[in-house]
Length: 184
Image (tube, rainbow, N blue to C red; front, top):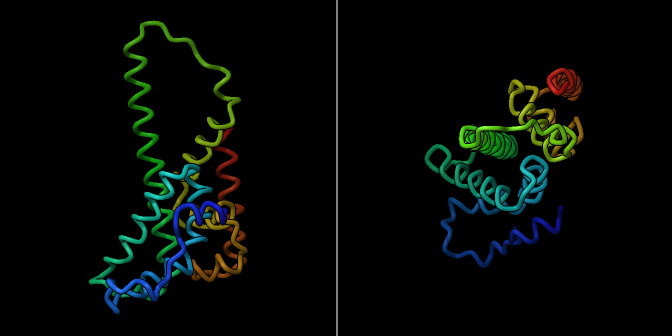
């Protein structure tokens, strides 16, 4: 994943950035400190470079314009929550476009045959799982995204979400059980 973040250009020399106001230097600092972890999480959720770049940019734009350009109280939690919400919204929009395109295609052709091989296709299953994750309640979705997609330890997840690590484990277990039922 580090090669992905390098390819996207996360290397900032904060001393060289003179056009940024002093009051906004913390945004660049957050990009430098948290950027690689965000990129890693977004890669696991979205799966392609263009969407990762778009979600990353949207996250830091929202941060830069957060409540009259003030720094959030819990910057790390704000960044990861905003990034995961942005990525999930992108997945929902893509699913909506795909459904619309499928309806249009099925109405254009008179005879359609079911594609039984599509259920076995790994990309299809991956998309189905991502869609199911996006339907989870927020408190479960956050834990799944941070644990399984960002590969964070429960202690760090608990710190980010302001819950005990044991609670994060319970939430993940509930989420996995729900996903298993939905994926049948």
